[in-house]
Image (tube, rainbow, N blue to C red; front, top):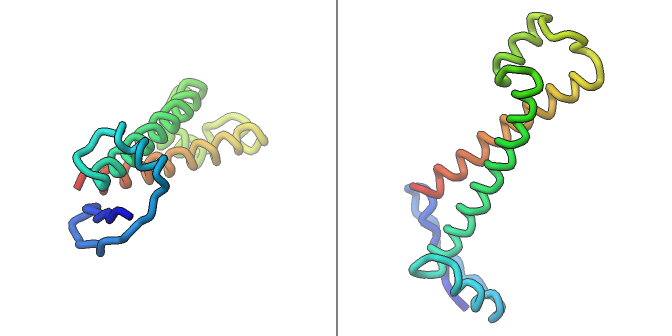
Length: 116
């Protein structure tokens, strides 16, 4: 058993004891970090960055397709400047794009929390 104390945010989070299989512990040795807590935080950071990249790639497709960023698209939508705005394709694009922007914000907040 290994204890992992979480330094996330400025508040003190009680230490939790976690049991990990031997093969997981062996693989954690290959992860950068001085101790298991730092190794796990590094893994989380890498995963969050990967999620951000995925969001950015998908958002970029919408930006390229519509020639604007989401806030501009939303304003154009609200002002009836988007052609066929109630078509299935455009409404779906709006919802997915908005969801990706919100998801990206969530991942950024998580990344900021890890860096504190």
